[in-house]
Length: 175
Length: 107
Image (tube, rainbow over all chains, first blue to last red):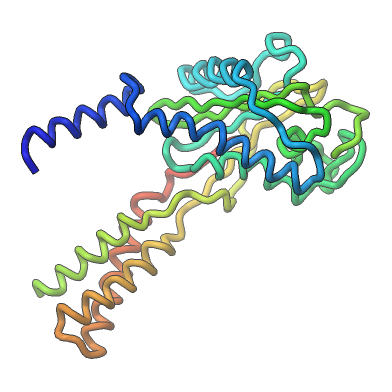
């Protein structure tokens, strides 16, 4: 391999890592994210017998801002509910580069094994709604829109999904 | 000996190439200390960690080692067996060293 090609490859990799300037490869990666996350959600919703979600770029932007904040501080907690009125939030944090998008969403949807249909929060076989809370937000019947984003630091990847309207409201039937 | 080294390298390479994507299987579960109120309830985020069993590296290393061992060591069951063992050990070691201790997630 010529020195020139090596240098070009290194530059391309550096551009990819830096996220700019946009290349065809990075555009593909970025454009795949919404469809992958949306498909993972809608497959779960179809199995639960509820309508599919649509992607909302505004929710995606809000999720990106919060994911970046979590990555910068390497912390893990829900955002202030008053700062995202009317929207639900699912969070995932894990070892950087060790999990696929499907694995991340799968960590939420796998809670289905504890789920029993009923009136929230009495929807968990374990008696504890926390064991199914990410899943119930995914399949919440009156949620119609979703937007998500991933941000990373050297140690961890952070996935934030925002849902409108919010799920996990006491007294409502699921699914 | 040189042939055996080549088998080990082949097995190790197979282990690297086959380093598996992390799966959400859970071997250990603890409560993450951060908590917060959520919809009027207190929600505790949980931590899930998994040490790699190195199965993929071992299997792929073993199979690759068997194929390469059969060719490099002149064929026959001994060559295949030596390649399989070398490849399995090397592939498993590489898989384990790459993935052990480094797979956790919180939700």
